[in-house]
Image (cartoon, rainbow, N blue to C red; front, side, top):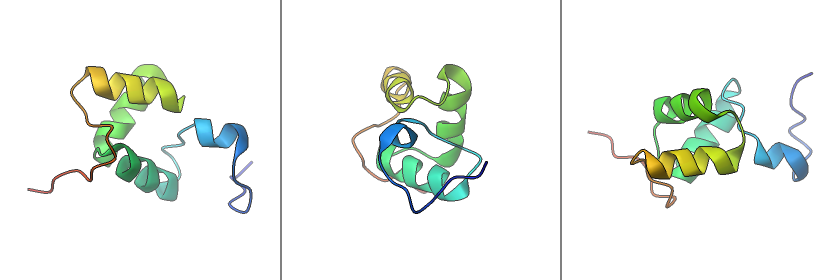
Length: 71
């Protein structure tokens, strides 16, 4: 079942779906990492947003909300 983009809040905000480009872009921007870094974090710890944030912090990724550097 596809995501309902009209519905916000609830459990869906605690999960990261890297198969939806809009979510991948939004979460990577929000967490200050590249899309590839986000995908790797989800592969490592699952799609729970809090676990992904913790993993990124411990692996040197930024979770301050800064945009990733392009260069």
